[in-house]
Image (cartoon, rainbow, N blue to C red; front, side, top):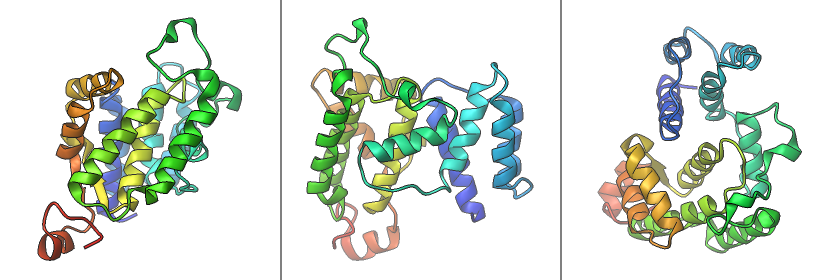
Length: 236
């Protein structure tokens, strides 16, 4: 990874945790700083994450380090439940497969997609994404609206019992990047983010669209600005 890619991975990992009200400890932050500066390699970061797994009081530090590592480790980008599970396994590698997916709970009510039908729901979302060419070559306003739609759909699906939001944000970041746009999660206020998700689950995606609009930036800004204009995307 280049120094810029290391810095971006650490910044994303930190923000991804903060959006779930998690804060890595001083040691993990120092390890991340060493990684950015090139004083600690990815392999050393992975070894430390494995050692931290044995400590019950260090789950956030482990997640922080593993999220940094996720940013440099590819997986099959199929836009389906298999991809979501591949990301989730990288965050929680020791969790048995049968415990990873959310199971039916009496308190679920109507707020989330029925847990017994997760596979069917994920397949429908994957098919819809494929029909839209994974949001490739869209102008910015259209991309914002569609990404907010899928963020809402995936939040409603809520496939995982643990680290669901973190997994979805990694997936959406990958999807956006491949479509020609990057998401700057550092622009997302945690309180506004939670409120936008909840309002979307109740039927209004206006706040979620505003949140996404504030985060979206072109992967190739020179081409966008000089050839296309801010509101036009990679198709132009």
